[in-house]
Amino acid sequence: GETNSRRNVNQSSDGKNVLTGFGQEPPDSLAMNYQVERELINLLLEGNKKLVELINRYIVSDEYLFEPHRHLAEIIVNKFNEGESIQAASILEKIEDESLRGYLLEVTFEKYSISKYWEEMRQNEESETLLIKTAIDTIQKFKFMEIDRRIEDNHRQIKETTDELHQLELLKLNRELEQEKSSIGRDLSAQKI
Image (cartoon, rainbow, N blue to C red; front, side, top):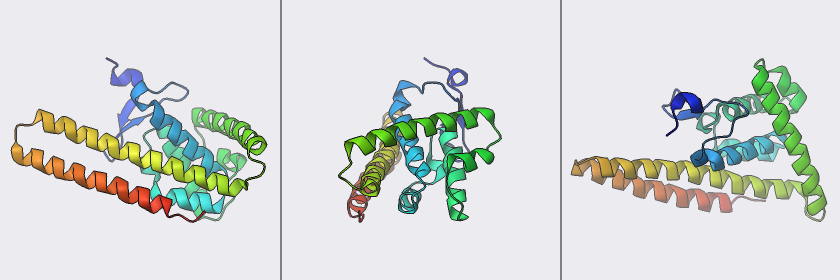
């Protein structure tokens, strides 16, 4: 098994494990979370008002598992809320940590490569519409993965405890979490594009 120190996992203020390492591959169990979070940062970096508001409506920076994503989301949303433009250069000015600056540059480079690819592939579809569709899909993946992690954790607790009352509470909580997934799915599919 991997140790916490090797993976650079810290407990955040809300008790979640947060991956702190830069430029390292996330553990396999979190690889998809990492990709989805990175996609959300790319979407936020578009600086599109509708995109930022949509993502911010469903996901707050504390929900990101990876600390670099958490910091970048916080900076981007704060700049947006202050009415400032969201551009990599102005965000870099706000970052003192060299590894976070390097990570932002890497994400930004990736974003422009993807944007160029999208332009070539989807010249006939309006780019904002495509970005909003992508944001809705990415938000849903993010929220579903978060809820699935909680359900999995509850299942583990159900197996570990002999307290039947606690088991029933956890089962009830899992039903509520499944309902929350359905509600999020309905709400996101009702978003106007």
